Amino acid sequence: KKLLEVRNLHAKVEDKEILRCLNLTVNEGEVHAIMGPNGSGKSTMSGVLAGNPAYTVTEGEAYLHGVNLLELSPEDRSHEGLFLSFQYPVEIPGVSMVNFMRAAVNAKRKYLNDAPLSASDFLKMMRQKRAIVELDNKLASRSVNEGFSGGEKKRNEIFQMAVLEPRLAILDETDSGLDIDALRIVAGGVNKLKTDKNATIVITHYQRLLDYIKPDFVHILYKGRIVKTGGPELALELEEKGYDWIKEENDI
Ligand code: ADP
Ligand code: MG
Ligand code: MG
Image (tube, rainbow, N blue to C red; front, side, top):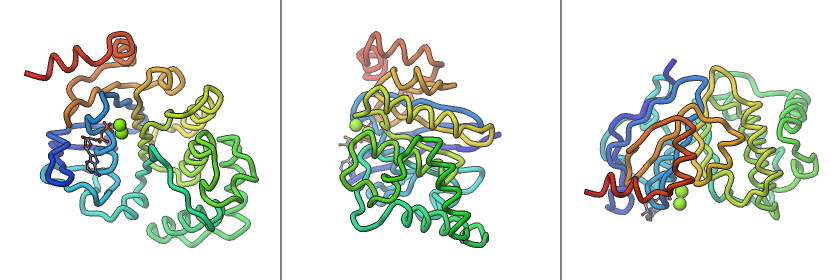
């Protein structure tokens, strides 16, 4: 069943067109990898889908399980089940992870007309989810991302993802700055959270993450559109040959 449908999406930032006719369909249960040279528009795509106000959509459509994303506030997109992990996670001094996550969970429940979780149910859920990403209890009680190492921030994001149970998670270069152990834990968390109802889009520069998170499809984004789609072998081909051949094929 169709989960995300992006059709003919065009978007600009400060009068510069970045996305030019982006088309992408993601079905329930699928993992898609998006690769492409720096500056192709990968982060712009994530930002546009998440509702980052830096980008202006000039044309096209984006639906999440049939809901028009482009009409929703960033918060409501998240409540509808979209999760975006950032390339550079923000620090929120003075707000503990526990309180941050509790506010997020209850905001989503309110949107869905569910009663807030009791304190004990919430803490029980936190414990279960922490186990998935092997996140230390001490980290969970510290301020959001404050003084976290690169690996801890990424692990923390996967923890947030586990708690929010998104339908579609977009991981934007979640692997950058991770050592091999952190990479395994992050990838392991993503794999454990996989169901036949949700889907993941992994944006990455490196094939190595795809050794751990097996994609069903690999797309190459170049100059604001998807110029090639294949299976996992496409990522291996890129690793071997780089992007020059993609540029040659598309720069006419
Ligand atoms: P990628 O993630 O594929 O490396 P980006 O989406 O980050 O590419 O960037 C695509 C292009 O849009 C780049 O030329 C970048 O400089 C530009 N761009 C992205 N975000 C902004 C912004 N907030 N302000 C100005 N230019 C931006
Ligand atoms: Mg980049
Ligand atoms: Mg980027």
